[in-house]
Image (tube, rainbow, N blue to C red; front, side):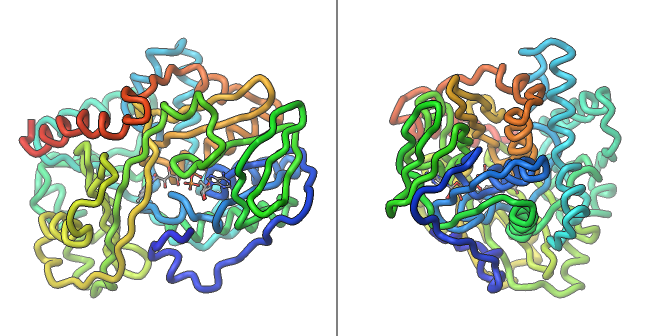
Length: 425
Ligand SMILES: Cc1cc2nc3c(=O)[nH]c(=O)nc-3n(C[C@H](O)[C@H](O)[C@H](O)COP(=O)(O)OP(=O)(O)OC[C@H]3O[C@@H](n4cnc5c(N)ncnc54)[C@H](O)[C@@H]3O)c2cc1C
């Protein structure tokens, strides 16, 4: 499996990892070589615990190697949806865990000298008045909890410092969020984990888990891994081994990204002069940024039916030129798509079984920082500090209606939100 993403095509000297052979014994087996699984392996390795990571394709083959690179603070969706299910003390733990996600990225980049074009500055941009009101209450809620990174941009004059577009009525400028080249970051983590003792395997799809005090993970091709503890870190790409409790609580949504060829410095100054990444407040949002090589990386076009209608490139170009008409002549370098795993309430779903299988899924398009934090939380839970993991595991996650038909049911539900966005209600 390849991602088709620009990150992969430009990374010709990407590190590779061996394919497993024979029977391997491990303390902990991690399924999935994305940000969650590799972060868990690194946290364990830092504590002196050797884990085995099994990745079906290559490291970053799932969402982690093909995302928009937006580095976002906190849990997706209103924190209210989390806090109202918890005691005040538990809500504080959950809030801090969400807020530590970007800090963890910063700290790891510094500790392990990872070169991944980290840049700070983010616009949460409103397309109309109702969205601006939503941002107002987000600012009030977050600041009441101590977040001190917002600047309120209430009109187009204020916005013009950061973005050359008249598509937005206002924004929150957020210096706590930013962007990175995600595949380079992931490989930096994988290298660090390996140096500290983790064993990473590629081309190692786990087909079945035989349960018991020691679990046996059967890998396509005949190899197997025996371990008492297993972590399922496959998110929207998890194949064959999802637990029943996970299956109806995650729905895959396709999102697509277009990268232009490098823009001139003059053009960059006209579109995003401060280098901020931008996401609008629509349910089916546009998200974009200028990368380390001056390319516009423009994402959007959520498909809840996961059926490809029309040309993805054409649609993304239309979305991009609606925001920046000046990019009408910018050439496309690459277009790719990937699966985002969403939950009903857009909050990641954590859990564990009585016999030692841990999982997290459903970052709902917000996983570049959060999946690493969540992987670290899984690892800490196994090592003995389950405080954050237990709080997040308490949250209720409803199954999507519709059973095997849940994606069409979701599409119908989302049609209303898309219509509401279009009508600016
Ligand atoms: C197009 C797109 C744009 C996005 N943009 C952003 C963004 O800008 N900001 C943001 O915060 N989030 C974004 N996201 C979401 C983010 O990428 C994910 O939340 C995050 O990468 C999830 O990481 P993960 O490690 O949990 O899963 P993944 O990165 O998907 O990794 C799971 C891995 O598990 C492997 N696997 C699955 N089953 C098995 C098995 N049986 N055996 C072995 N291996 C297996 C898969 O091959 C895969 O590599 C985006 C996602 C997509 C698709």
